[in-house]
Image 1 (tube, helix red, strand yellow):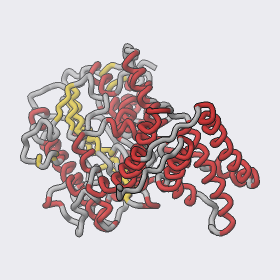
Image 2 (tube, one colour):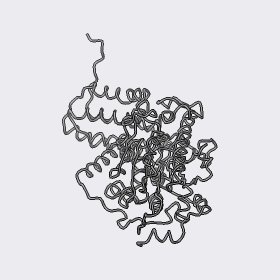
Image 3 (cartoon, one colour):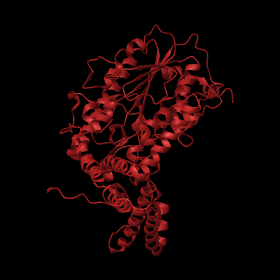
Length: 557
């Protein structure tokens, strides 16, 4: 006689009920947290009925989704896949407070293996084992008891309807409360796991598939763009440094109490713009958006893919454009200009170790690109690794451990918030060092060239405020920490004289709000590219140019 208990034989419907209950109760902690967080102040007994209605609605929707899955031998694999997907998404949603929407799917698809490896910690593996693998094994272990297909079909249709009817009864009793709450907090639906992540993945895949099946010619951006004559004037070199995950809230130049910008703060000719916002909250959106020329309000991935971008316009008008990348790629922006991947995959620099390169690698070999003998105007984009998390400690060498104790491990959930913030702030100190070195390099060449540097981060970062970490929340309800980014500029004295830029006006310009939208017109202005679509108000330095220079930039209008 076997000592093992006999396996319970379940029919399809009880199995669906169990899985739906498991998902609603154990895999939707982020959803429940979002619901409770948005309840009116003063939680108490008055919210019990409200939460019951939400729970019944969640259960009914999950049961309906599961009931629509295949039958027979396909049912168990489908349920196992749902549980594993829910466990994976639930881990990152609960741990970091992120939303797995279409942009997050795109961001994950474009993340390199090394960055992804930082998220796959022992804690993550154990969490996935308990939340996903063990329930999946239980589903596989329990044999299914067959019932007639008519009976099963009827139960699959009637049970979700019954659950939804029960939810409607509870919701109907408090309709006004639900209607007002639902209208104000409709984004809470994005936390429903695993249906919303799966829906987002399908939408992302359909977009990718449509792009592959329908090749299209690129629309010309600023087709009338042309540069002023360059004969007889000094060549100009602009370094555009695209930061990664730096937030303005922790930038000393923007009022942060800690000295995270010790070198930049000591530069009297640095221009700092303390009120700057990003185009998105993830690299996969912000980087294409800031170069698209569309502006955040009109930006879409499809529109950007079907048109030239800022780099194309500059290259078409004779500017030599080079993209140097130490991050996870340019997200399609640099596909038609010279690109140098100097990340760990292609670099043997001493600045590289442990599978990645520190950002000082971006400065190696830069002197050759800025050789004074080269008479061409040149834009060099440096794409930094910056402050990419969660393993912030990997982004800076030991010499830049200014704030201690810092979180020096990949499983950051085992660090205190103080240690996490210390590690993050150290990344900004190191970024400050790299930017200061780049400015020093440009300053040394200002006898022969007009030089400038612009630095802006692609998006910010949450460091535990309101229980949210990392970045990537939908823009509509992302916190300021993910949208407010540092923006600084440095112009050589020769650049200021050549463009007749008024110093007092430049200082006044730093006090106005700015955004990623300003990058397009700012670069047109710096390289003296006239175009009918140039907008002076979106040029960081536009208002400070003489009237004749401003008219020349819109000569075709």
